[in-house]
Length: 375
Image (cartoon, rainbow, N blue to C red):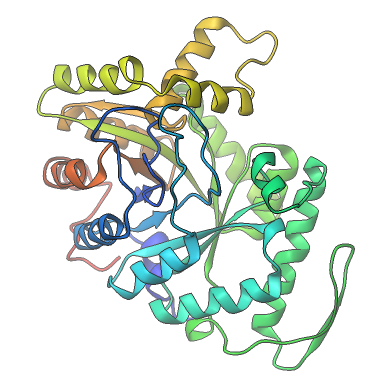
């Protein structure tokens, strides 16, 4: 079957695919109070998508957020809903793959199937689905929805995705008799673009999450704690995927970028926004939710991880001059990651410098190709 544009981009020639992460959320992924923090307006997102598309960036990935994390900025309190956001961006770009992020327990799969296929057709196959099986209880309380026991969330998601794919693949009405869904006469038309299925991404760390990802996903998204241990981690994930008959699975991760003319400028700004001007209450809430105060974790490690939460929601810091930033991204590729998301404090202001000074270095290092080459 011929690959559509989104699949060619995310499984194409570039050894390290790049994606813009979290631009649909106020402050992006930086929990900071600086005045220049990201304003997630529609106009800003549309302008950023066009810049990314022209630069050859492969994808944009949103965060599905329904309420903020508090603090002085109420971090990520203002957000654009991810499927309609994706549909709008895809309609105004040419090659970019745009994901929609969906909290599986909060959306019925028959509705989701219709919503996804519409967006996929708008984009002619450049739409991707990022599945989230459970997360913030405060948000679930807003919907009057209870979260299931941890492992059961993935069993539910497995049935949910089976219903979505059943709607796309069955020409006639079908019944579904599962543990969580009992449906009669389910049907849906049209089909996804060119007979393909949109790319599926899932973030997973637990054994149950990893099993779901390798069975049902094309991309497993995982946090990169350090480059020293990353290579083995990626190798283990890929081996586990092969054992479960998924030779196609790719592993992506997240970094945040602070790139300036000199290393000193970049490090000073990093300290300014992520330490001096950190939104401390929001960082504390996220640290608690992410289990940073687990018994036995050394205080110095907790402090390091809190710094990374303020800097970019826990991503790996990539800080320095253009040579430093390019070298660190090459290290990410060498560790075995097929792609990574990138974030900035102010995407529109900082991305053009990254495009002009870092992307050509990545091309010279052989991890990316010029944007005029269709991936």
